[in-house]
Length: 119
Image (cartoon, rainbow, N blue to C red; front, side, top):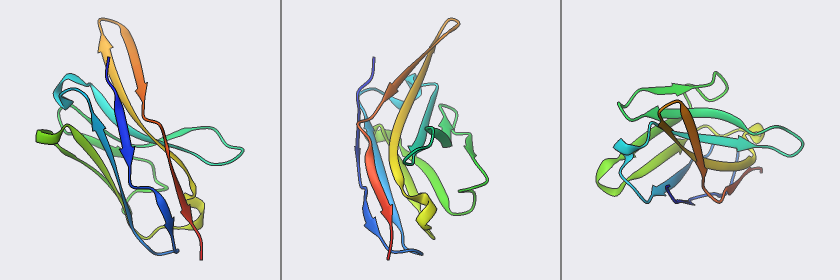
């Protein structure tokens, strides 16, 4: 099992930046994949950035070049640096930890943090 605590959301103007943090209760190397999801009103939750235990990253086209996922292994923390924010980035952002045991995937979630991009 793993507990995730998020921080860093808020209100920002278009073109601005925010950094989200997600602190895990266990070593990142014991987690197969850490990811950031977001859910806008009336829409499904979507995965848009992830990093594996080996450090491989993946982004959706909607955030590629603007968002960066990174880790601080000593702090068991994953960060999401968000630059050039747009109003369509407004959503609740969730940190996710996926652990694979044999053939079963286990997903754990942070509490969610609101990001609002508006002038």
